Length: 96
View 1 (cartoon, rainbow, N blue to C red):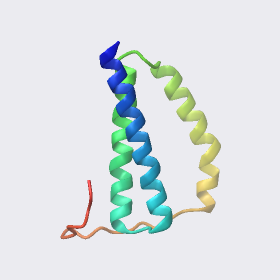
View 2 (cartoon, rainbow, N blue to C red):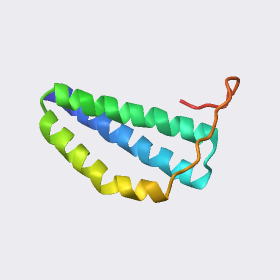
View 3 (cartoon, helix red, strand yellow):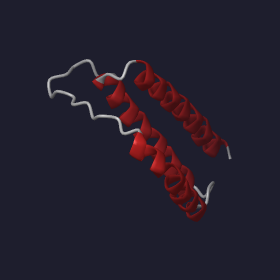
View 4 (tube, rainbow, N blue to C red):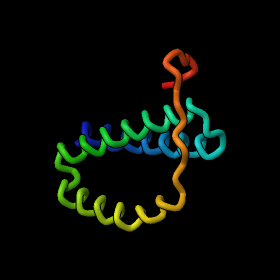
């Protein structure tokens, strides 16, 4: 059980980092902030996957809830589309 506790702790940390990344996009909305947000989303998705693979959460429940949440909030996005920011290939200010 100790190993899975490490996965829970790391999942909590990554969720906290995702919250911070969202706040930075709201406050600054820079290409770097958007890049960091995408990376933190990837980390959280990875840990959700690990929780599913470990059997801690049931994949069917996760998928059903995800589908229902998307259906609930997708209409909101139609009215609040955020323009994409382009990150130049030479940008070296990306944090990770």
